[in-house]
Length: 194
Image (cartoon, rainbow, N blue to C red):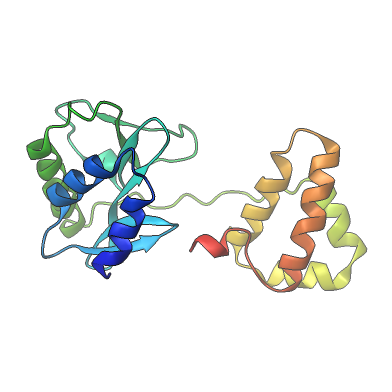
């Protein structure tokens, strides 16, 4: 990745720019490739994302794709989405002066060793639970039904979950309406982030 992409990301977050720069320097190694994916810097090793770096309003964070396998002697890693993520762990940084960059380097080194060892959780097959609103739309339109069935199982699940998690019936209906054009075009809900 051109350095300008990384530094462009850092420049978009002036409140965390110095910390992001220091973290990048602690992470960077010749064997790691940096790529902007989902709008943020990710560090790839042998073509696999092992960690990412992101800035938020009140903190910045590192997350390790297979952080569940890290020993975490400092107890800094958390699962931010219990029940959704199984392997990913985040190191949230709220105090810019409290980061041990040697510890960051050690965690990155361990993540690389874990990748070399092939440590990874196997994906669990999730049952596709269709919300009534989506089921009705698919039943009423054979082209939409065929286009939905042509999507990958993951893309089908993204649409189903996105629609089902809306609390109000009106919101679920609006989400089906917005999803219809994307489904007919064979586009996944989150394709723009991939």
